[in-house]
Length: 472
Ligand code: ADP
Image (cartoon, rainbow, N blue to C red; front, side, top):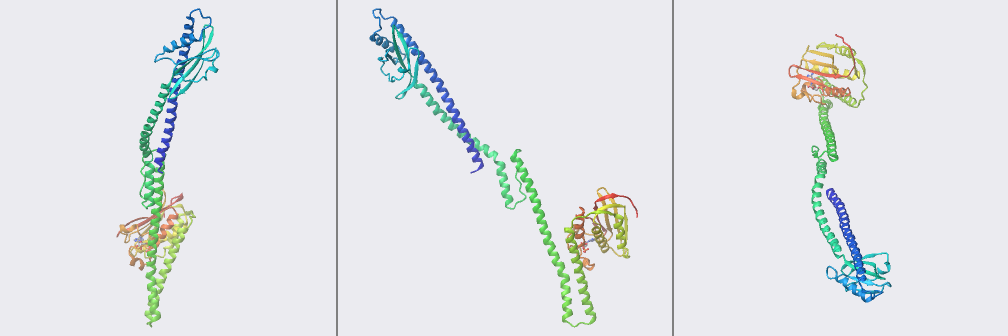
């Protein structure tokens, strides 16, 4: 059953109970008040009637020392005639509670007589056929006799009014319940709208639409739930995007890897086949063996690089205080033999917080790339300087540069701007991918500024432990 219907039904049950009880209480209260009033009137009337009887008895001629039964009957029949609407209903009994006179239509039994004595009045409400009466009984002193006067006063109207009240209240209750139900349906539909919107969003997301968000239409707990749901959806979407990107990158990597393996392997297999199946002169044999060797070397270099990348990806950062001077000293020594390039080093002294061997690998790769991109005797500047958020090391060359559209792709594994040129220089497109992984460990990333034909600048910022200044 729908939540809104449950809400409506439970409200209706509460409303019906409240209306039922209050209606019953109200109608009954009115009934009892009216009945009490009529009982009071009946008792008053019977007292007045008793008094009238006693007065009439006083006027009886003196010849009777005891009021005879015939006179009692006579007075009773006169009193009976004095009723407002066609006569009173009364009954007279003597001291022994023997009935002396009974009006026509006085149908009450003699149940009240034993309960009544000279000092007490008694009454009860009785039903005779379809009518209700207040039956009263009082004692009267007529001359020297004690008599008992019983009266019957109709209270049918009070009962009829109660029945009418109940029937009217039933109708009002039904109308109010129906009206209340329509209003509650509307309110329940408004209240449950955020739940419907959330359900819709959940279904859309389950069907694969991760961009869909639930509309927030209230500021209450359900609004908060919608906000939290959307926050959760954002996180989910982000994770799914990341996973998709990762899968895409992995597929791209596998494709490029297979391609890069295929090229040297084809050459190796081709030349090896030639060597074993043909008799060749010495010069050709040496040439074939040479191809096999260089392509094999390329494969070896590629597998080492790949291993480096895998290791760098899994590496836990073990950063230590390292002097920038020590890093630059290493680089200067390493490239001292490279006389065909003009490599210039300049740095501010500082202590950086790095894994020295890994950062050396990054710098060697960047300087190697700069050499490959430059003409013979080209200038390459390697600089280090303190900046606001750490220590910046940059490798600048004035070589061929990188087209703008390619700049964001070159850090991907196996990506080479000019494949034949890169391969001719023993490149496999893995150096920058390795640099990026190493810098990730240092919470840093590679910045590339380059202009085709003018040169490139690769830089990154390292975390700093301490700073000093030193000019080379
Ligand atoms: P490779 O082993 O080919 O050098 P890298 O990942 O180091 O692989 O570089 C990827 C590609 O980026 C290179 O093939 C080259 O086309 C381009 N590249 C890298 N550094 C430079 C540079 N300083 N100037 C111009 N192109 C560069």
